[in-house]
Amino acid sequence: MKLEVELFILAIESSCDDTSAAVLKGNVVLSNVVSSQDIHRQYGGVVPELASREHQKNILPVVDVALREAGLSLKEINAVAFTQGPGLMGSLLVGCNFAKSLSLALGLPLIAVNHMEAHVMAHFIQTTEGKALPELPLLCLTVSGGHTQIVLVKEDFSMDVIGTTIDDAAGEAFDKAAKVLGLPYPGGPLIDQMAAGGNPHAFTFPVPQVPELNYSFSGLKTSFLYLLKEKVGENPNFIEERKYDLCASIQHAVVDILLRKFRKAILVSGVKHIALAGGVSANSLLRKEMLRLGEEMNCEVYIPPMQYCTDNAAMVGIAGLIRCKNRIYSTMDVRPITRYENFLGLDG
Image (cartoon, rainbow, N blue to C red; front, side, top):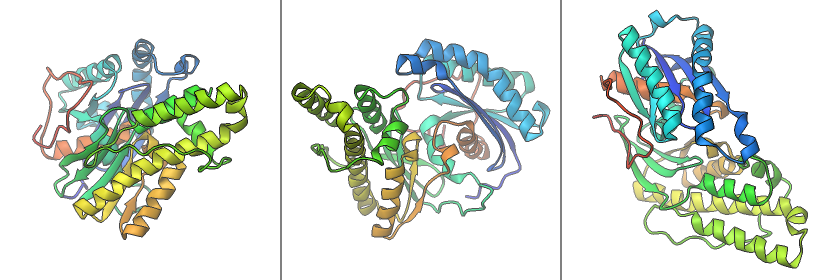
């Protein structure tokens, strides 16, 4: 299935603490505007009520800027796509209701998009560099703050989750580690930066024994906390003195766990086109080791540009394009869904 379609899609993303709007012409991004919410830094994490209020303030100007940057008016838009979930209910409601209002007022098709499906579909955005799009089937490791999944993308763009976390996600392990190390929110990027100056083998952690292609990161978090408790008891300055080594070691452990299972998934599926997606795909060690794994397994590796790793509306638009091509639209009774058991699928 090809993606070259002359449709103008306005996409809206509001699943957590980023308000984003994008305009796409087919699979080409004309604009992709993201407004991040700095208010959460002082609380050390996202406060759902504050997030929804910030979305209400930001969504209209963000959509306006996206349309102006694309050089289009609302009358030229062919469909409106939005993130239905998973995410924070209050945040999702803002994007959902705004999209429904536009759809109703302008008589446009309304397209509900699964946020995790959108992360995977970010690979099919045609960038200005003209890089070839991934071939299908594609095996994608999707890693974000709340989700860790191995996704098989079939030839018709339908998707199956063949591996997932049974408890905490990899991003949560990074966030928790950063918090106990005293790093400000968001801590994941700071762990990545500080790890560059540390020894990744300074501290070791047990590898979780989880069946099939699934993941678990709760044990790693607990092991990290116990290590700090023990060492701080011996030396109150331990964290400050070994902060770089601690960052490097926890990052190495998370990436090792992720790629051990993904290597197994490659062998089980036989798929030779592999990809990274999700906010944690911005991690420098994960990107480096994914490329190394691809070389080792003789696979073609696809890693999205940084602006499409974190939450953004362009990825929602490209996922919406596939559904639009298949005439899979939503009705006005569509509602946000905070959790999905699986992807929506191309049958709605």
